[in-house]
Amino acid sequence: MWSVVWAAVRSKAPYVTFPVAFVVGLVGSHLEWFLRGEPPPTAQEEKSISEQREDRKLQEIAGEDLTKVVSLKDKLEFAPRAVLNRNRPEKS
Image (cartoon, rainbow, N blue to C red; front, side, top):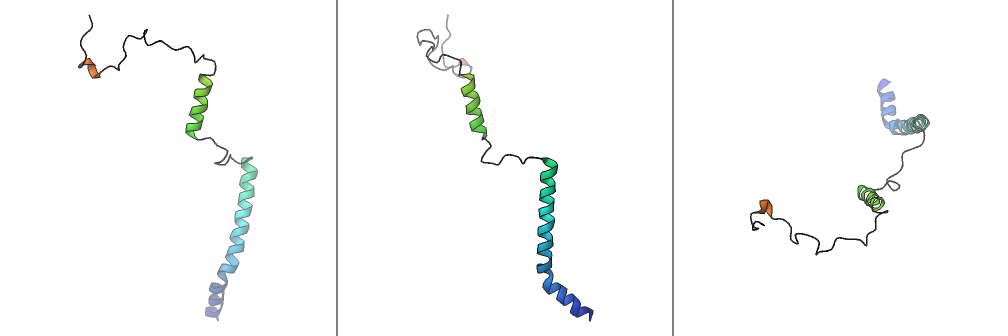
C-alpha cells in the first residue's frame, strides 16, 4: 500500500511543489520590499563609470574660460621630454 502512495506522491510532486514555491517566493519578495523600502535603481537608471567621469570633467571645466590657452611661443619645449633626457643635448 505504501508503494502505491509513494508512487502517487512522486508523480504529482511537481504539481504540488510549484505552487508552494511560488507562494513562498512571492511572500519573501514582498517581505524583503517591506523591510528594505524602495528598491535600488535599475541598470537603465544608473550611469556608467565613463558617464560619471564625463559629468565630473564637465563640472570641473564649467567655470573656466577655454579660449585662453598658452601660446606655443611661450612654451619652452615643443617636443615631449625623452626618457631620462638621453637623446637631447644639455641646455646651457
